[in-house]
Length: 113
Length: 231
Image (cartoon, rainbow over all chains, first blue to last red; front, side):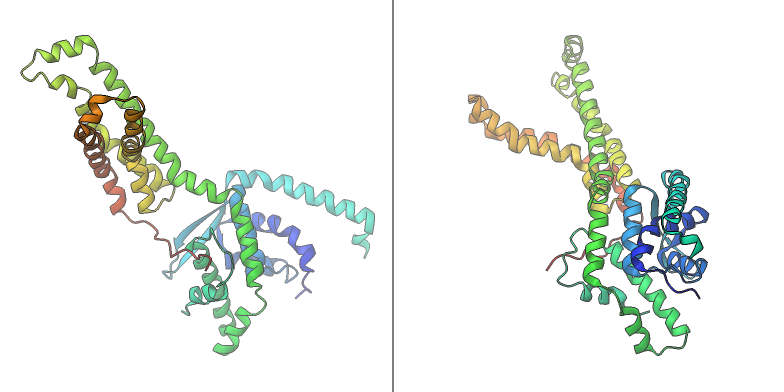
């Protein structure tokens, strides 16, 4: 398990992390948090307070859409799925992050650290 | 399953969480329950698991962040989609149909042809009666659009009945001051006609609209838990 990234750094990556996951399949909040934690080997961890405000903001922007559904166990879950608008944002967002990493690398030599 | 919803409401008491729907509390409660179950599965006892679940949650910050995330457009958009747009659709339809029927029925040829029939007064009803018959369709459309946008029963009903609500507003708040302002002596001397007009233009149409809304009031809606309000 990797040491968690400082929350101030992780905060900016939340939207990319969320829409990347939702591009694969609809997920509910807890599942999103778990998947992010597992897929990043514990480097990115989202709590209740960091995840849901971002989900609501993305929903507000029209990038994701939440819908209550009952799962096989009979429990109501609010599943989030990526909207066409959100899907369109995925590639530009990835590019922005790549430029950011490259710029930061040139500046601070993060890849050599 | 623990009642996390109650825990959330307790923790957030005193917080300014205006604009939160019960859905938010329900969703957060779901998250806490999942976390609790996970900790229990890891072998923690009930009290430890509860303490860990509630540990590190900055309730004040959470309320502020969610309020901020939801405030900008969502609250307005949701209400607009669920209530105002469907209401505008039903109002526009009702008034357009009324306008068209009035233009047709008040044409001299139509009045002349109807006045010669067995009931002369029917000419005055020529626009009104067809207008009444289409009210259920208009009410159904308003309620349907509201339902499709996820509106509650009350929103579906309001959207469907909106033409009659506006008509009632006109007859009670616009026409009486107009009568006074124009010193319409005949109407001032016969206020019962004003009441009759209000009744004739509001109640039958509202009944028709209501019947149109009815199917959408009977089918399943996701009922919202009570909103969390500022104390």
